Length: 336
Image 1 (spheres, rainbow, N blue to C red):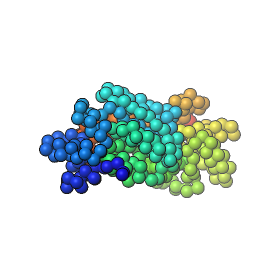
Image 2 (image 1 turned 135 degrees about the horizontal axis):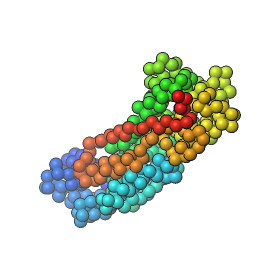
Image 3 (image 1 turned 120 degrees about the vertical axis):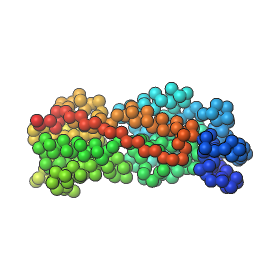
Image 4 (image 1 turned 60 degrees about the horizontal axis):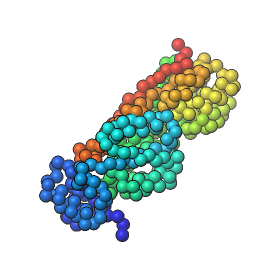
């Protein structure tokens, strides 16, 4: 028999699934009588008995799961730090999993967390993830989920993201103000909304400046290797770009490596900018212009939203939080 869900409880009690979810979360909008009926039926059906027992004893759970694409990336380790600051201060432990940018590993990580009966999940999707059924299965069981940074728009969960559109727009506008006019974009996977928004911000800045957006200058490149390869290809064209805006600091570093090896003057001949403000970006020569994403703040806000859901403050209504990235101008684009 499949593990019972809030829908099984709702059907047997002839009430809505949202009422069941709120009752289990001890939401004050639900009457004591209804809560008692729901808890009794949940125990009878074996619905996450450990979680119910824990809630009855202390009014809260004890363990949260987090899934990130790559734990070694500075941005994601910063997010985890922010998450831990909030959760540790509220008596919760953290189980950390990484997908290694693989959709199958992401699904397995979710299964592992659910087998460990976590009381909520924080997740940033892998670049391969196109299906969200594994997340829907979690929410169907009444377990709160908050997405951060890389979100699946189809899932009705709370989320915390950077204002990627505005950040890209500001960065490309900076390049235009520095005199660059043929700006290539090293784009990320378009199944992820953050990369789609960075592409849209790039196009908007060009449009406002009266610069034609050339599709031949938009290439997929999210890694150092891809950035190097794409830069080499574009710079050998008859009409090469005079600047690169990369959706990732890594692909920006790849482009920078190629340009330096070929003795291009940076930023005089060609400008390069990334997105993320990885620590290496200010240590290399020339230092890299980029966007600061405030990973610690993202982690704190994500954790607080999840705690709100667990504590019944916002169990059903989803909340989206935008963090404004900050333009960090360095040597790689600063002509004036």
